[in-house]
Image (cartoon, rainbow, N blue to C red; front, top):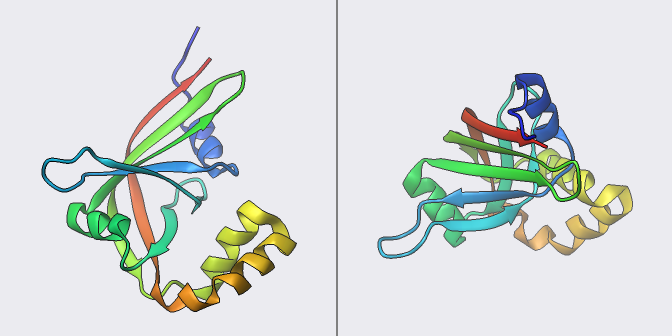
Length: 141
């Protein structure tokens, strides 16, 4: 039987290494944009992700000022957390330490070094977005 996660469970789940799906209101006449993201989160804090400053995603995030992020467990026991929140700030360009932290989280030390080297030419256009969680949905089976 499915149940709602406790606050501690959902925050720990969100803090685990998972790919999130960012959803944001799109232009008139289009469905909301939903795209995978790498993100950083520590329980009780803000969700942080990095994207290109000139990307469609970034334009929509700036226009909406709020987003939804969903993460899920794709194998039993199935679980998910969805967080809706306001954007609380941008860091332009993203701090190199944040770029490194995101890359290490998802690619490990060696993979992060290679990824950061191959995307160094994009670093000055990268923006770190901070989102304050306000509404949570969660389920665990």
